Amino acid sequence: MDIALSNIRVGTSGYSFNDWVGKFYPENIAKGKMLDFYAQYFHTVEINSTYYRIPHPVVFTNMLKKVPDNFDFMIKVPGSFTHRRTNLENDAISFVEAIKPVVEAGKLAGVLAQFPYSFKFNKSTSDYIKTCHDYFPSYPLFVEFRHNSWVNRTMYEALKKEGIGYVCVDEPELDGLLKPDAFATTDTAYIRLHGRNKEHWWEGGALRYDYNYSLKELKNWRDKTLKLKVKVKKMYVFFNNCHHGQAAKNALEFMQLLGI
Image (cartoon, rainbow, N blue to C red; front, side, top):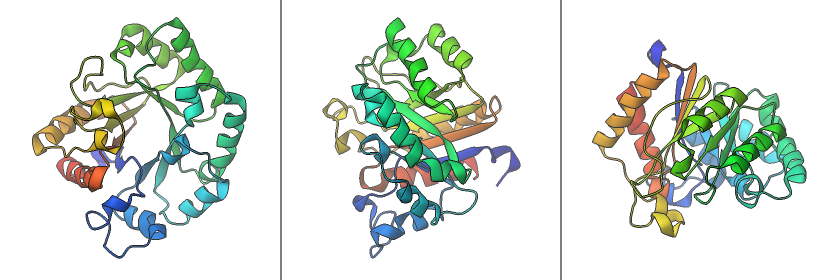
């Protein structure tokens, strides 16, 4: 790999999907061997299951046994912080305990807080972002917004001041959603590509992420990535178009375009 590209890590948003079997994973693979196989191709992964349920620390202890030394994890915070915004104290304690093995192994890239479309920019929500940061002061925190009211100078300066990372997104061109801009508020850039499935976006569910990026679209993001990487120390690019293994396919294609 080109030394100039060594600060770019590409992966997928999750890895344990049954519909990847026969498309990315071998037909006869056991569920418990998926991460071992995944780690042969990628050096990072987003763990999204923690949004739904905080696991026992042994879950991450077992994951660590399946990956090489140069592998790291980006872990999503529980939905209680981003969607329900309740029971924060207890869930923060449980979440910190759950990810402790990853932290102690030096393999935590950061924690991701993905806020819903209904979470719009105002003083109250801006203050709440700082509250979230207070619960996880020891870890790099990255925030993803779905409503375009957040794309403004006030947000940018506030995140920069607090040392909170902004997540750039690629999603359908629909009213209210964010445009595919590429910038960073810390020395680590973060890009998530969700696909551009306009037809099913507002329905939610797995079909929202049923999208296969074209070579032209991937080249466009390659160019943005290369421009942004010179401004930061490290970059993470995760593909979340996970339906039927398209995330793994596009991530591998993207790495090839980058020369990784």
